[in-house]
Image (cartoon, rainbow, N blue to C red; front, side, top):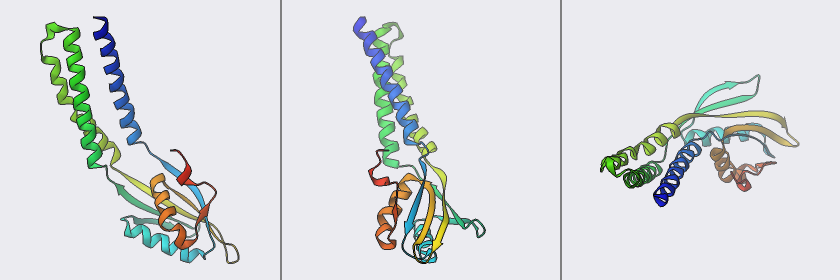
Length: 183
């Protein structure tokens, strides 16, 4: 009985781990970073706007007084990750059902029906991860001698893509190196 109880505790801890993984996988990772370029501001903004529109972002608003642009995009969830989470949820729920069956044999095989709850993990992930996101560009300074400085506010992955794909072309550099941060 003691080993069954400890197995039940460990199985419940695995369920808690799955819940925290689901929360982390769909967490908002919006970050603000300041980026500088030696290029003129119009060239930088035009290249960024074109690149964003090619990636499916749509221009939502522009404010010439604030020198800002806002883009909106729809982020999709990963079908592969949703399937994996459904599988892991089903296996984990099945294990929980087996442990409950061991602890309470009088329940019969009914606890194994918990396996049917497994696909809910993929469904929850899919619904929480698929959302509309915004990307904001704001021109901080524009000097022909020193180039331009921008403040970008967007999802961390999008900022990394900008740094990797447009960094060399536009000579972008920033104080906060997104590629070396652990999260």
